[in-house]
Length: 540
Image: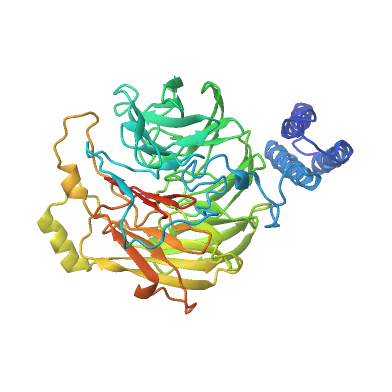
């Protein structure tokens, strides 16, 4: 055995044993114990094969351990602990969601698919409106609980409304804690959010009572910093997950940070090599996470912070576009991104969850800079991946009106589109083009940045992506939210001709650009563009 030392062997054996026992708890999981024991015996045989080969190194131990972790996951799946990721008819835990829209993109898969319908004809306008009297920035999708109460997060406040518009409570962050840069999460009666201090970028986790808005606890982390993009806090199996920088001078976040849901205490971290902008991890509900970066790297890690697989291009520390990935109900993870050498070369790659193998890859021919949505286009329709393509608005901070007019003259207007792709093959099902926007700034940006405010916090740019994340309703209608002119659109290719034309679109103009998607509960759609107001559409 070349390069094999007794201490390495013992360490590797203990590592694998530890992995196995952390993955399955006989006291709490209804598993076939003999099956697990037999598979663990097989794992030791495989380890012996690794050891007896002539290239045993420390890295080999890591590879073997990762293989055994994957083997244990697959074994548990066969015994009922993990939902079968290759069968749509097997329900994963997000299908029994505690709340209607508890987080960005709704469910554990981050699918942005709503298994219910809402208003899709906007001609009558909203049922009620919160007019955002302090002119605060609204970066995130509103959240909706099981009573259809609505929680809206602004730069410095969290508000809870009834479904009919009554304000129930308001929580205001302190200047020392900072502003809200992450989408919040509803979980077991609490709303979890992260405030980031503007001067030192240290994050503070807040846990508030959903019913009263009072503080349960907060936890400040002075040993990590967070990039100020628009990421998501997630909660899975009583573990809080959020991104932080792996290096202080990095272009974006490069580490998953895990904390205890009971008090925010540190659990583990995992550093990745790609920049993941607007971090929003997906999960099949099997104690693993999947996420991808804007340059195309895709990852699957365990809920103990161990790498299972990494696929896709390698561009360490490089920022390409603010896109990411979404998990389908078919055991496939869909990563949307753009080529590191050409942002206009947008792509979608479909990876199998079990081993990271590529199912298909499709070039979109335009910039792709958002998370996709995945869901059926109607009860008997195809499973689809709905992606956004188009131009990203410019940074509004240094731009004067005459400069924007000159930009339109030189570059033409901004354009946007939506493509629905077959989830199994990547073939295009339909496409839609938003009317061109004769500006390179998101609607309302300059006006709201320059608006005088007397209350904390001071506001800066929204600078949204090309569009909000699409939302798929149960009847197959897709809701799009524009980051150009601020239009809210319902789209449905009723005549199945592969193109959504004007007669198949209903539009509501907000006149403010969107950063994130609308939210949906049965019979109710809630939309909040970057600068508000918040519009609530309820079915009669």
